[in-house]
Length: 211
Image (cartoon, rainbow, N blue to C red; front, side):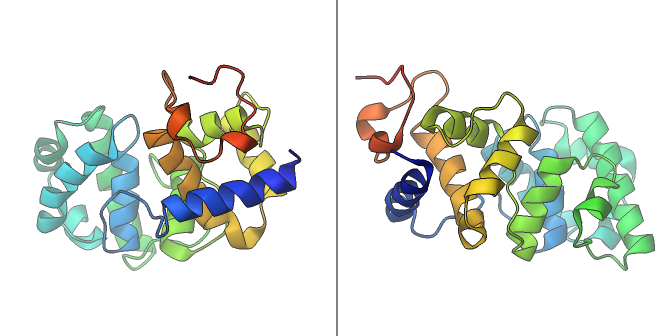
């Protein structure tokens, strides 16, 4: 199956399975999404949502978070991986946003990546989910599924991002990203993909499909 046909099949099949795709992180504003995404590094969305339920009650915006004591912030997020560094980054980010951006999250990748603890993937998540920009945030699920299916033949996430952006129509990118994440999380799992339950098997190049 050629690449264009793969994209059409995946878009239709996973679109039917996930008709309203969106991030599983819970947030109400771009700032809350940015915070949740920073926390999500090396952590599950479920764990992040447990923490942010408390965190956003205490500090729902950059101004409130910027006034928090570091130890108080650490106490709220201490159950998550790398909470010391994440707390320092969140406090620094909230202060920068408050002092330089009027408390608002910037709309460009360059500005986002200039913030402490914000890399390309985090920036892309915010640009896509908060601002509707057709960018591809490549996490472990997107990278794995893209290579198994044959949309990419890459070793590095940045190369996967470039490969996908080059072939997926811009108007499909945002939903397609969610399809790949959700498919990787619930069906095309790392250790044992659930191939018998997979609706995109005809498009898949993975040689080690499970029976």
